[in-house]
Image (cartoon, rainbow, N blue to C red; front, side, top):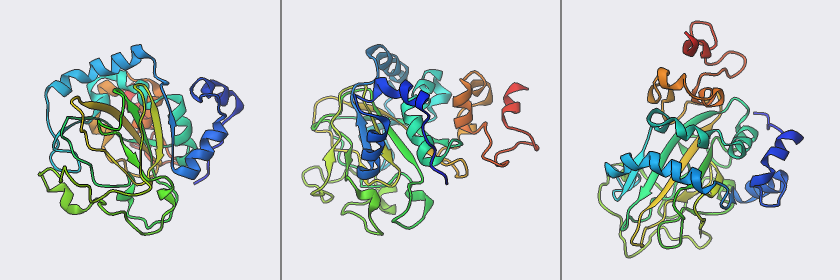
Length: 292
């Protein structure tokens, strides 16, 4: 997989988001720590727009099915099938610059979900978002995960926790790492203790409208919400063009809805070709299916 370089014109377009740093400086931090944070880059009106689009699904209050999803959390899937406004997040130029450099220009949207932690939610098991690829560590990341804060993430309300540099680990796991039993366990984890506490972990505290970009092989987890209010984020995730996405986007977003999305969003859903011809439909480019 060839690392994509960022053209000078593209770097100029990214400058408003970089907080005075160059793209290469941000990339170096991402390579070293496994993640990088861009505080407060989403305007207040866009935060309000995203929040309003999510509100009906949050009000439905469907809780997670196990401790990995979070039994005191709402998870909203198939987001582009629910409202086209979410295309603004998945096609944001800054996160696409990272995803395309890490995964190639033909990368796909692997998942896009909103996560709303209610008060009383306990810590999530430690996990890597690309662990499903079943390839041994250490290795190159096979995913890029992004985290947009619709609400602020604080020490108290369950800020995502990361272990800096853990993307470089070998075949070791932190205490409290995800296990198959977590997908069938519907009981809250112990709220008083933390068997997964790690001395190098940090909480990604960020104001609303911030973006964290992380390698898919970085160990991280959702924190415990010990506040009296909920915490809402949106997390688009990307995979290489040759890899099966976590969510079957071509079913999650009906073709008639996909046809109304921007072209780059359509490509990320799978209406694209990974060279030389992976992804064709009846021998033709899949984008033709939307034009018919």
